[in-house]
Length: 260
Image (tube, rainbow, N blue to C red; front, top):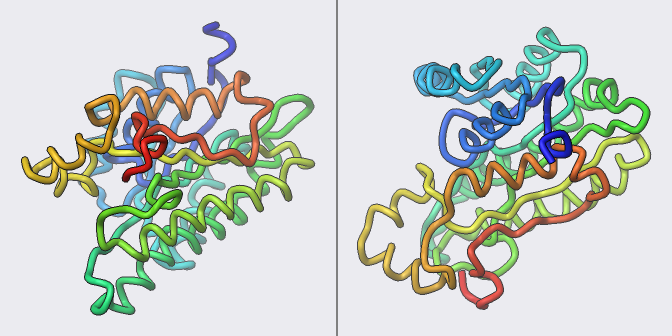
């Protein structure tokens, strides 16, 4: 089993890897033996994350702002300077915006769609040469997109651009998977429910909202970091070698209960 889920000898890039779900995935990748590159906008948060992860394995950091194509291209160039082959790309960087339906601002809509959808596409495309280099023989490269259950069902929050963007991530995952499978690149998505992160702090930090959220989760708790990280390890490892174009829901039963 340790060999089946091993990532030894593989290089992985995790965007938005300095905190939350990205940090959880980077942690489990390192525990599985991967060399991990994490990127984020803020250097201080990257430094803190690297210090936290240093005892687990080979971790590197790159300061990157993926809110523009120029930032995407700069990250592609930086990663290309550090490795000739990228075995795993985790597209985790994302943002959200909340506002009433009548007042939802155009700049908020554009910000969310650009980072969550457009940059994901162009980063994947830009890193294809490195992913192709990693896909040799029976060994396949992997792309893991972080979606959300908010893209699979109507959420309670007024996060219209976010839910629409995550639905787009699901479809883009399927489209990329179909196109890239013949080249030995498998593309899947993970749709998390409620996990601890800066994005969900307004829920977990409020007793009223937290109680409301708990009422929608059949298992009665939020997700643990190792549960989202372990799912990513499966998709990145030999165990996930026959899975592509899938969205794996990790939400404690919220979607099955018909509430989010």
